[in-house]
Image (cartoon, rainbow, N blue to C red):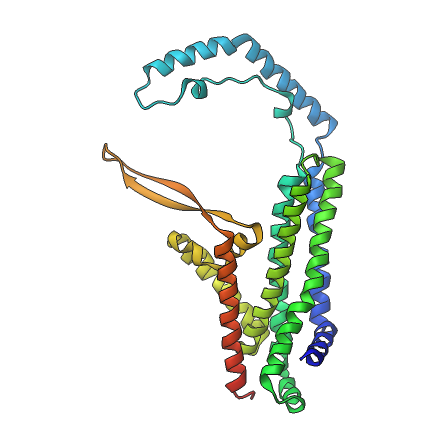
Amino acid sequence: MIRLTKVELRRLTARRLTAIGVAGLFLITALLLVATWFEARPLSAAEQQQAQRQYEMMHQDWVEHADEQRKQCAADWQTQPDPKPKLEEMCAYPEPKPEDFGKPKIVFAEVTPELLQGSSYFLAFAAFLIGASFIGAEFSTGAIGNWLTFEPRRLRVYGSKLLAAATGFVPVAAVVLAIVLFGTFVIVDRLGDTASATAKVWGDLAAIGGRAVVTTALAAVLGSIVGLLLRHTAAAIGVVMAYLVLAEGVFGSFLQDAQPWLVKLNFDAFVRHDTQYYVEQCKTSADGSYMCDYVQKTLSFEHGAWYLAVLTVAVILIGGWVFRRRDIN
């Protein structure tokens, strides 16, 4: 199995689409860091002066009218029907601060998890695409038949191809995520706020990156199996796009209670170690009015991990059964 896997790894790395895909990943990573740099840039001198003038005007108004506004608000609060909010919450007029005006500084601990999660999406897509092409092209050209003549044990061939697809993308994903992580730190350290980058924050970010590497490997495996089942790269891409549009888009928006069973939400729950989603809940109030509100719910990391594990194992078993029994031609 090790010998076969090494051969498959060499074939994977020698493919033109693999080289193009990896180059595209690094290009997207560079564009992501450039966008982060533009987002982190401070305001120009003219914009800073305008923000300062706005602050001084608002602060002067607060000094002159804050007490009057609090008294008027307290009087209005007395006339409100029950239940009413707390007086301190309703009539809070905090003093304006300079940092409330203008562009806030970008914070490393806040922006980096989102960037790593976004990177996990395009890593998974690229791994799926290249994995599907890796096996789909062999069926399109008939090369798989020649390979089985050399190694007739189909399950060994099947396992080596999946293992090569998974392990081949681990270093690529690790390098891309490391570039995103440390590149973001360099940018934010120069233009924003890195004071919150404690050891715990670094540990959490490393964990997000590690889980993103795992999802990249899983995507490569699933892409390879879909390419094997459909025997064509374009068909595999079509299936993915149809799922994203119909299941994630249409089905997920109409049947919101089914969101915990969609791939993307479980993907997010695994990568981010829990994720939130919203469900619309409607009810008739005591006065007969019908109101709807969005309730935030949490999908746990454990749910996402089990979901992805069961899905991957099931697809691997189906792919192995089909590859073992179906005629190559």
